[in-house]
Image 1 (cartoon, rainbow, N blue to C red):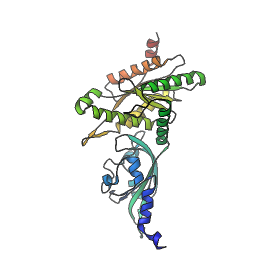
Image 2: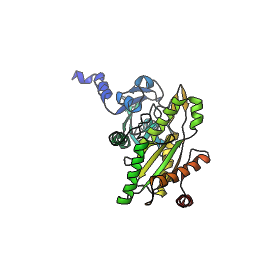
Image 3: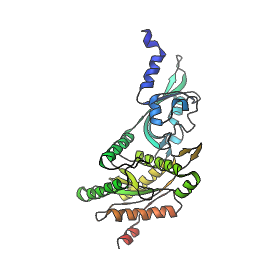
Image 4: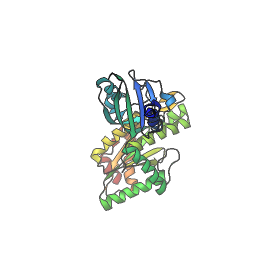
Length: 312
């Protein structure tokens, strides 16, 4: 069938797939970028065709930093050994925030079975879908902050109250993390209010995407965010916070040709049965104050002594 031998047929199919598909040559220069890749990453084909894929376009990130030790590692590994590679990573969106994706890289061979390039398929994984569900839920059960897309202060406070009810009635443990962008005033004086808004959106989206479907992150007064981490005990809170902090560190804001880095400080604690919203957040805020006083870009968990002082 001559029609099926037309390369344009296959190109059209690849272009119309809902998942991201792109191809590189042996030098890792991008030679194909479909509409699914545009939708997921925010980068248009014209932005990436001909560019080296190590130019911060697709930087994988696991919980400990750049995935497998570097950028585009699945592609380079597949090119090297000729084997398919898969991984769950966080990729950097054009807007600067991190999005979770499942990637699969495969080598491309010519008619002589020589490797001439590689292709990578990527699609949003369950965390991304959960982020969409959280947004929809917030829209129907509360008010969304127009700047960040997260539940606003009032809605977040209601979700915190509900979590305390669930703790008492259903024994569902949870912790909270108060999150604040470091150097907010300096950042604004150097780059302006619009840059601050862009940076806060990056932090908000990264936090939302990195948390589980059962967790909640929303806006809090004074430009902060509050994360409600369900089924989490105090012993695991520092690990959760460090993972979120690293995700933000590997995000960033492109602003008038400059790459603006963003870091956050966090303070948190586990909810107790006799807690009110005020008492729980007060302990988390005190831990956040210690994080900021220590220089920022760190996670602190409330100590037992602090808990006692606040309750006396």
